[in-house]
Image (cartoon, rainbow, N blue to C red; front, side, top):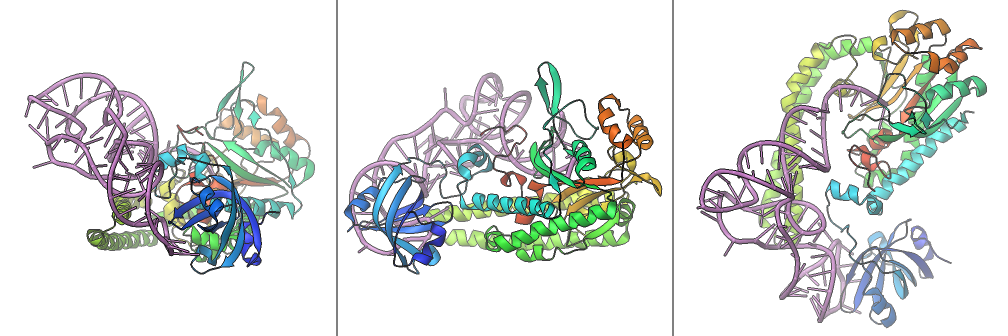
Length: 497
RNA sequence: UCCGGCGUAGCUCAAUGGUAGAGCGGGUGGCUGUUAACCACUAGGUUGUAGGUUCGAGUCCUACCGCCGGAGCCA
């Protein structure tokens, strides 16, 4: 019978047996401290020299050695977490030597090359647990509302709908592609089963290297029968709020440990901000946005100033420091701060061009990252932008009957610069209009006959959207980069491990 | 594909064009309560690769390779 570290406090003064991995160790001449991690938590285990066998067994245990140990739980405020195990017996399972990841700062390249071990750190396991909770919350949201899970194919035929670049795969001499969405198949299922959703990996072959990009990411996509745009926005709001609610309910302490202020998430309430593309363009060009951007410029200058002061303070602390490792640590902080300052400086030097670009943004162009950041920055909750120009969007989106220049679509921009986390639309449900749109895009209808059948036999208004899991996890956890939100990120030029 | 930054010990980083170093980690010894323990000793290098300039290159120049950030594109 083994006790999980999470529940140790319930066993005060009792004898327990745990198993796990060494997460840290220190030893004195007559006492050794082992930090043991078992996946549920970390516990300090104290081995005294009086326990001769255990003391000898503890000596060769390097970082990440696996072991079982027995001992008595005791409450002691000197222990991290307020409770520890006084060890009576140690049974090593495997003794690890020269574990590569030390208890110190590492570079991104090194960590990604050791992703299989990096997962063992507290921070990475926290993020993956939150990811799990968010995925469960998303699935619960749809399951509880009568949606049926439909698994759509990953291998798909033919060149797709113009949007995005696909990964080609050799299919016995024929070229097929990894799916970039389950949507078209999901629409078929929607006409059969009513409300459905799919959840799976999706692949984009864009040669893009930014903090919001993965070549392989996970997307949850509902398809809703008889839906109009308002149905889609209200389900998007419901879904996002359900995910945030689960994070706040189950992971409040974890979010704080990650440096995420829960208050920023608590502000996310329905209704979200909402405007049309045209209104967004007007807002982008407006004097008030200009004012806000100029104020942002001032705020960033002030931030630069305070960072510079903090840098001076750190440098003074460094000059006074004695311990070599402390100097090292301060050096690292100083470097990080200098990087941050340089980021702000380049950002500031680019800002006038962005401000000017916002003023003169032409109607019809799709928003880039800069515009999204400017627009989303005007709100402290997510922002819907609807009714994009037809030319900027995919063929299957329904043209607005009241304004043929635009389509009935929605994008949801997360606050704080995390970008687009949801994209969706009402689908074109009329056969002739859909065929006209495909012709407009120069598409060959032959491979899409099955899709057109959906409009021939009992077509109904419907629509759906896709929510990108990794960007949502990054936003909710307050992470700088999506690479930490998935166990093994697939990035441009990185396929190991 | 384009723009910018960076490649020095296992890791994180120093080193006016002039003898390649520190901390962490590893090894050895010491210490009864450590919180990234501490103290002493010790091993560890073709400075990304190939050219060039120079009496002399980790440092300057050129090309290539790799990584990071950004743009385009996207969830």
